[in-house]
Image: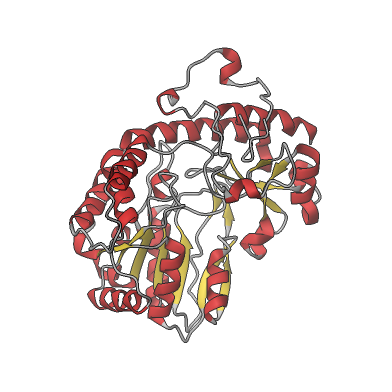
Length: 400
């Protein structure tokens, strides 16, 4: 395996490859070295020194679907790169994907095909709402919610997540009034917990009682591990509350193509959907997009087998790491490729855990404080790695 600038990363030789076992993901080279040299990888730019393995940014060090690469190559050969219109068949494609992968009945009319990533879409949605009341999000939670609210001049407040025997739970107490919106990562980022449908419905009811919109960021939803089911917010809440719920999603995290920003929003409320579309147009953004549509169509039409192999690879990596970390795992991941760890249980000083892990093991992580007050003393690690690199990570952890 190689680091992002071409520096070799040694193979610890302690995993499947050392035993001569063939991975079920071999067809997509998830256990082969994956060299990102010369690609401008922002994840590898975080490596502080030669030999450091970056595990902080939510970006996979794994090759994406062949179908996406082939579609981009075909489109690039046609040298017309001008303005494009939205292909309305893309809405049905998104609805079909939700039906096939999640058993969710999404109306194609709810779908907005966005020429931007979910982060930008959320900022545009906030501009559409123009909230006068506070916007809430849990803690610990993806730090982008708080950052976007600050940038928009919106009053942002945090709700502590209760912790149960199975990990975090969604707040079930009445929400403060007034509240304009509740922002939620679903599944949870940073812990990878899949929110139970009953908890999600209860939160939507509390939001409706506070006259608030529930915005569910579901970019990790397609990465739900085998044995778990992802509750799609707009269909989980039931017809009476759908007009108060928006789901944001993208093929970016699922198919490792976030460098080509694209997304889709599920907006059941026709009036809100029209206002959102007007806001997009005000920023010079319209549904569709040349590369965005190329990537979305290829991923959703042909990416299923690749995704199934990826999920098996991630589940195996999760098992190896959770067994290694034991009680230091704050909440066992049920989706995505993120591991949420208690630094004190690892023998690391909570206030400087990120720097200590980097110094002792040559592993770069995200600091828990980046996820709000509830993340203090934690670390987030990304385990979407090739097999040989994961072997090296496990070997280096013996230095703790």
